[in-house]
Length: 478
Image 1 (cartoon, one colour):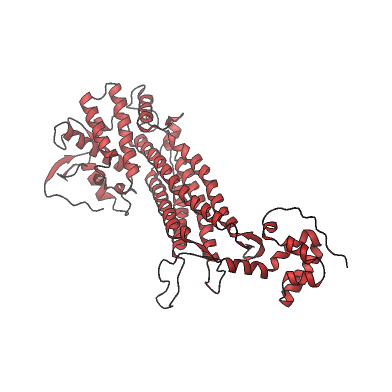
Image 2: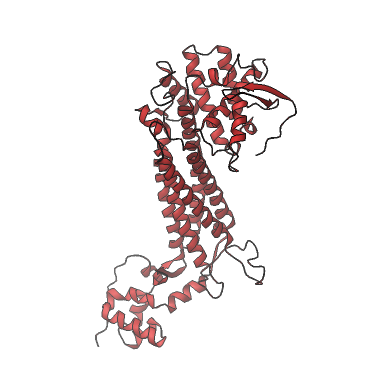
C-alpha cells in the first residue's frame, strides 16, 4: 500500500542519518527506511491484522515484565499498554505499511511496531510524536528484547490465532460435505479406480469420504500448531539473553499467558530455539496436506460433473458464469478450478518455507520474513477457498440420480459382486462375454443359468453391494 505523505514533517535520526518523517505517521525513521528499501511485493504488514495484533501482544508482555523489574516507569508502561490495546481493537493498522518480505530477519517489522507504539504512547503521555526521550522505540518499547526474539514470538502468536480461525472455516466446509453425504445416501452409483469402472457405491459415500479425509487433517493441523505456543522470548539476540535481566523471560511468558489465555511456554534451549524455524515448516506442511486433499476432491468434483451429456454427469455443480466466449451454453466448473489453483499456490508456498527453513545459519535464520509471509498467505488463501467452495459450489450440488442408476445397471463392474458366489472363473467368463457382445451382466447370468433371478436380484440389491454382507446363496449346477 502506498503511503500518502503529508507535506508537514518531523525530523528523526538513526544510525544511518537523519530523515524527514511525515508528521501524520505514527511510524518513524526506521520504518520509513524499510518502506523505501523493500518495495518487493503486494504483501504488506497491514494486510495481516492477526500478525499486527500479535506484535502488540508481544510488546505488552515485554512492557509488563519490564515494569515488574523497574525497567520502565509506571507512566511509560501504562501508555505502552494503552497503545497496544488500541492496536488490538483494530486501530492504527494502516501505520504498518512495510513489506512482509524484507531483509534483516524482521528488524523492519519489529521497529515498525516499536515506533508506532512509542509514538502513540507519547501522545497518550501528552508529548509530541518523535519526542523519544520520554518513550523510545528502542530503549522503552523494545526494552529487554531483540528482533530475534520479539519477531518470532509475534509470528508464533499470530499464526496460532490464524490457525484457530482456519479451523473454524475448515470445519464448516467439512460439515457441508457431510450434509451432502446424508442427502445423497440413497443414490447408487459406480465407483471407479484408475478412472475405470470398479464396483457400486452410493453418492453419499463419495461425499462422506471427502468429509472424512478432510476431518483427518484437523488433528494434524492442531498438532503442528501446538509448536507455535513455545517461544524464545527473552533470548534477545542469539539466545544468551544479553541485555535482559534475570527473571525477565519468565515474567514475560507469564504476562503473555495472562494476556492471551494461551498455554505459551518458554523454549527449553533459547540458543537452539532462536535459529529454529521448524514450527513454520511443520505448519506449512500441514497446510500442504490439506491442499493436496482439496486438490483431489476438486478434481473429482469436476470429473463427476463432466458433460453435461458427454461426460460422467453424475452431479450438477451450480452454474456460476458463462463458460466460453465462443461456445453458447457452455458452463465451466470455475469454483473447483479456483480451489485447485489455491492448492497449487499453498503447495508452492510450502516449498518456499521448506527451503527457507533449511537456510538458517549459525544462531539465526534471516529468512523468517518470507516464511511468515507464506504461512499467513497460505492460511488466508485456504480460508477464502473453503468459503468460496462451500457457498458457491458444495451447498448447491444436485445429483443426477437416474444417470447414476443407469450406469450401475449397464456396468460390467457389478460382476464383482457376484464373484464370491459364482467364482472368479464364471465371473471372468461373464465379464468377457459382456464386453464382446454388449449384453448386460444381469442378462448373461440368467442366460447361462448360473443363478436364479431371485438370488441374482438379492445379490444386486444396492444395500448388498455397498458394504460387507453375508449371503447364503449358491450357484446353479449345470
